[in-house]
Image (cartoon, rainbow, N blue to C red; front, top):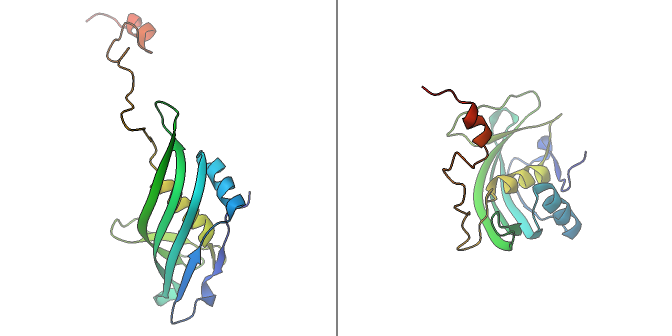
Length: 164
């Protein structure tokens, strides 16, 4: 499966002075990403990236992701507009270098044969930034059945429980 929004970067082609990029998927790419992430729509999305070479063939990336998305309320199913704006830091790794799990470090992005897909990496950044449980203002989950073991989803199992 190919990425909906692909922008491959050959790490060796990043100049020693660095590189600034602005990545923005077109309408068809945003529609495909919206389907993948279960969104009603992605109205806009862009990433501004500043790449700077480091020792060992690594590339440091500082960036900002901005997007306007439409999600569905988990309670009412009403459409909700959401704005995403967040900074990020990545470290693009040369072929063969393994990512580290240090909390303080930027996210390590491994390359395949010295190539990283910045479009797909930016799309994954968006998926992480989305509210996983969007809720319309004032929307509340129903109270019925909450805490009632006799009628809840585990009622049949509670009948099997031996008295102590």
